[in-house]
Amino acid sequence: MRHLLYHELLDALDGSACPVCTLAARAVDGFLRSFLYEGVNDVGLRARLRTAGGFCHPHAWQLQRLGDPLAHALLYQDLVDDRLSRPGAFAPSPAPGPDRCPACGLAADAAHRYLSGLVEALADPAFRARYEGAFGLCLPHLARALDLPRLPGPVRDFLLDCARRQGQRLREQLAEIIRKSDYRHAHEPRGPEKDAWVRAVRWWVGGRDLPPTRPGS
View 1 (cartoon, rainbow, N blue to C red):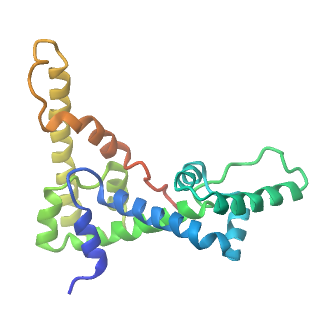
View 2: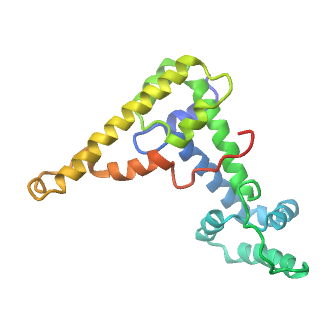
């Protein structure tokens, strides 16, 4: 029986987003939800957050959108008390970075795990066929995949070939958006190109929650 990672990746292969972005974002969402309901009372995790200066800007607001005033009160009372207790509390200091925010660290670790699992899964013909018909990797995750140690040559060639075909499809669909913006063709119904402008952003920079690169990832 195939392991869970394989099936998670298989389920994440569709035509709308990079599977590694999708699964890493899902892992972060699960972590933040767990933090609100359980982790906020974890003394060790709260200490890590004090050291980190809290969550980074994107993850702090992602957590806020999940709600829970009490959990936020506990977290930020801790952070504010810690800040006020230090000499030079309001001196300029670097914002929490990707190696400090616990959610960023979890996202980077999850992305590396899923990316390694995807490369391994591509040895399976059924998975490879499904990948060919899917969105595939975004360009940032493709670059990281190509940089993995001991990446088999055939897998490298396959990923590059899929990326070229994805790029060509996007180019053609973006051209259709431009063509139909001309008043002479504006009456034509929109086809599969209608969301290509969104997919182009996802392909170029990754999903909204694309985790940052970490040393050794």
